Length: 451
Image 1 (cartoon, rainbow, N blue to C red):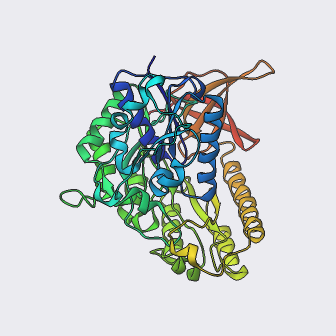
Image 2 (cartoon, one colour):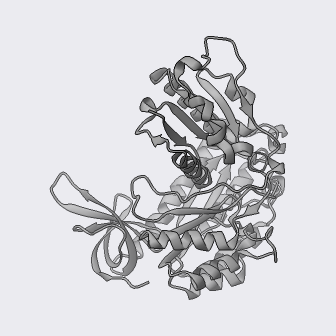
Image 3 (cartoon, helix red, strand yellow):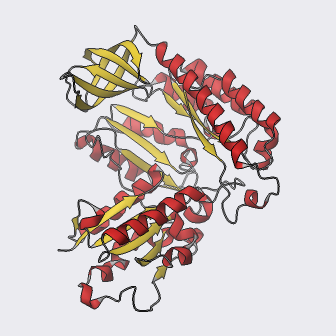
């Protein structure tokens, strides 16, 4: 039996790539295995955004090779693109296929499906095939809708943009994903329409630098054109926008979201630091006062919206004063959640060469402080909705040990919600919020929602 298993690491963009790779194999008549231990070929679709991401990939390779020594392990993704020789040296690896060749992965991987007696093994000295070339020479955009494994009947994620033209001093992603490139508008509308036809009622659009969508297309479209076209040319009930850089939160985009009930009231705006000095060292293209202005505009236009940010602590040269500026800015602004990251030096990036690296102990303490602050702000945001009614999409039913049934849901403004009783998944309804328990809202359905 010719079967395969794809394991994805990292961001939604990587998961979208993995979904497209799966489709390549399915189109060739191969079967999807239930687990790596049952697969003839295992494809590890890796991330390399931090050192721990690389470590996770290496650990997975060793584990799979130990548990299923006869399988052929193919490593692809960002780690494979960045350090192919390092990956090829790991026991069990049969092929290394970087992002530059991922659009042909199933074709390149065909020899891995030969009967075992026809394959060379790791015991015989041979060179592991490596398929990696200059990522900037490639214009392909590999993507397929991603479905949450726990909730396959709701909220597919559609990658519409890849690559990045920014050169942040800490980031390795442009060197492994290439220049910014956009999925053509016609293809996006086709995919959204197909998802609607399959019964999906909310679609999340994402990208590596989503707000740059369209700049490379004929006519130099902008991101607002994409959002408006989805509203005008499809019957999608709810569009959710993932992370958009501060520079791309235009007044027009904010007004568009505020004016339409069909766009989720949710804004994710990467911040990284509240210190002007650190932002300059990061090569970020905005200043703290610019960022503050964007968040305040979003909150004024969208009073109930979820507003989230990525924040980095421990960047080289970050002093106690720099960190305090970040902490104070977060405290001042109406964030409802944060993704807090500790700086991780990435090879070939300018930041990795900076001499004033922050001690790990200090960075961990700063990370903890921001997470605690974020938890307080999220709790206050959730409590503000007790007694109110919110639109929410049902995800899955969960029986409890006490014999009561609850339905997991997600509100329009990105809050997890336990609904009393049993509801079918993938339904928009109005929920009366009753309490906050264990970091989630609890409530009771009051009516079906019309988006």
